Image (cartoon, rainbow, N blue to C red; front, side, top):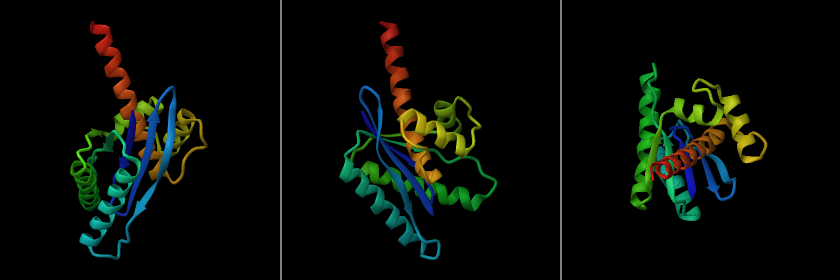
Length: 164
């Protein structure tokens, strides 16, 4: 299974591509940045183009995306929602299934603590993948979302096997 993980943001969207074979392997990670001084439509198009290129280049089996969280800053929440929508659209245009995870579930899957900070998430992502803690934090978060999805698949497969 090969998963593209997305940590959406309008200014910075983190991504991570993780393949599960005998172990987890990071294929690529990074960020897509848009210029806050540019018009909203241009930024959304730039984000769409970047995510579409990732999907076209790497051909993942699924996309896992962190869902918007309740935020006291409504402008931030709206921007994250727009970025998430663009990412989901890019996947839908390519018939790529999308799975959404709340931040506390991602953090819990990676660190065992749903309130872990970004540094702890990056450290544990590095340990789980056998690499140095990824930077920037948004790229580590993209990898974390992909790992979370792969773990959820493993758990659901184990549960199905247990029911037989």
